[in-house]
Image (spheres, rainbow over the protein chains, first blue to last red):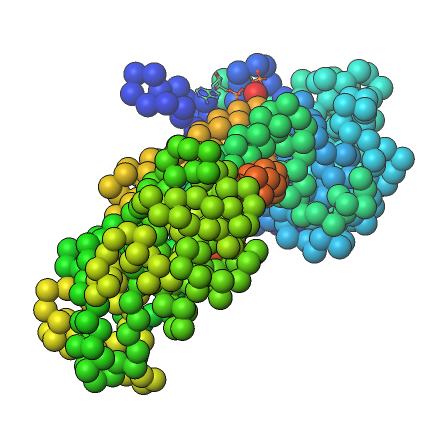
Length: 234
Length: 383
Ligand SMILES: Nc1ncnc2c1ncn2[C@@H]1O[C@H](COP(=O)(O)OP(=O)(O)OP(=O)(O)O)[C@@H](O)[C@H]1O
Ligand SMILES: [Mg+2]
């Protein structure tokens, strides 16, 4: 298996001068396709920062990042980074970030539209994605008419639009109750195993832990642990 | 609407939903555009209407060149020319015909007393140069009677005339209304009174050899400027104009000297500015409300132009709907102006100009929103 994402000695510093703060120190790791990687660590340990570096949203201050072999060097423009995100990466957020004025299927269709899928195919593909996530009967509803778990599954459908090879999720279950959170975690796990997507999930939700094929531990911006628990569920 | 939504691209869908989601603000935007269109439309229409009025006499003759007393600035105010200079003009090569046209102020006494100032227009019945247009009652042939005049229905009440055949006094001489035109306005507020050249001389006490203008028609194929220069050289102390130049001079004279032109342009500009401010303001408020959504789009990898398209389409939707409503009102004003002495002109060209101005206004209003979007931070979606 060749790595989807390759980080070497990555450091991130926020601000400069006296107020500069180094949030990540010398992170080296490879993210593999077809597995769900969990990122754990106390608050402020740099989990979101690392996820943003992986997602081409934040430029590493030091070290190198490669996405499918392409070097995400400092010279890349914001437009170039956006294009890379569009092509390779799907995001799932803690607060869903759905477009409130669009129906469920329209939320997914917009993602397809940005990826320049022909207009005529957007509706059918959006419905197919929602159907896969068990939301076929909710396609015509607005986000305000959906439960938290349904919203997050619409968000996952939107993130999967255009079949990106990387799915990055920041605390996707934090706003959900026990069973619902577990369901969302299972869905992400299934995407990794059935579709071969590289899934990275930031979480300190113990209900998510059993679904991780690999668990990373961050502390004070350093990667302190990286293991593959044998109990990995299938 | 599933069916409609299915056909819309993402940016159009987002633009429309962003606007229609906040009805009250959308209504404010549309009312703003509507009033800007109304203001610009009426002021520019008035300007064009006034311009047409000030040059109406020139535009409604078929002359190629006008010979005017030296120093003439507009068609409504002029001195006198010796009518015999006609023959000098006729001798210039390229000249096919020369007709005298008289225009002099006179006093009009209404049947029930009271006096108004009028512009007597005396023209040559045989050539028809300077004859009244849009005649709706009576016949020009009736002007052959030596007290006959034709006036416009727009000024009939001002001149105390209710029906054909009524008699009045012009400079204390009996005159009879034998016809009515409709829609011949004057900018000077001294209505045109049409009659024959001979009658006009009599009414205004001009000598039989005096006139105001000489209207020149050229032989086919003659070069206008060459003949103009030859006439100028030959006749000396007169001005010789191409008709279009004389028309433009009259427009410039009245619209500039009276300040009417700049007042109207200023009001139109005000409409434009008000429109830009209102559209800019409401569009920006909508954009700020939806910043998290723009950040989400950006995080998802949307290029900047995708975000701009959403905002520009909001501006375009506001422009189209506001323009439609505004033009409806402008149309009502134009209809209302038809029966009055002040005309609002609205040719297709001006409608086109207004459409472009409206689009320009809304796009400019969108600019501050676009500036805001350019600075958006996609990592804000993680907070
Ligand atoms: N934009 C920023 N500017 C300055 N400092 C920042 C910025 N973003 C994060 N930080 C700092 O970097 C450190 C790591 O933040 P990060 O958000 O990556 O932590 P986290 O592990 O995701 O925390 P949490 O579990 O609370 O979400 C924190 O100390 C934070 O204050
Ligand atoms: Mg975080």
